[in-house]
Image (cartoon, rainbow, N blue to C red; front, side, top):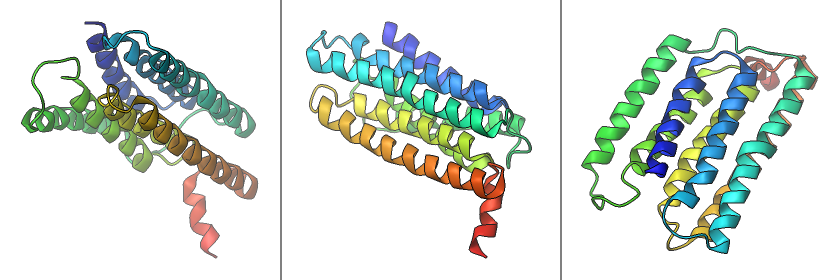
Length: 211
């Protein structure tokens, strides 16, 4: 099934995100994950209704192009290329991601979900993606990498929202995209202030703001 392939690729991108130190690559992988998730609604057998086409197009444009474009512009201004000395090393991050994915599968297996159907892999994939986004948020020092983590975290929420596509497709996705926009803009402001005040994007510098 095509949607199972997309879900599997989405989970694999989670591992790539936690294993790479190159910020440019992180943005590219997050954009690729956004495109995969944007294509998912078209593979769920709901037909090609206008609202599904609009949701899919909006997700591909926003997650796969617009937000990565903003992140690349921010990256060009600060001239940094790698996440050096993260709070949690890349090998440990990879192991934690594998552990989180395994726990997500076990947890989803024990939830009272409807057997069969196109959404069998959605819950474990959504939980694993949420965990990966959270892991990136708390384990990286650079603000721009943390924005990538927030983007991945939202991708997990988006996966949960897709399970309601039959009942409230526009409402769920509009709410999620609005949250994402607000979060990205807030983080953009934070990144700008950090780079202007300290000529760096290391979030450890925020500790000096309290003085």
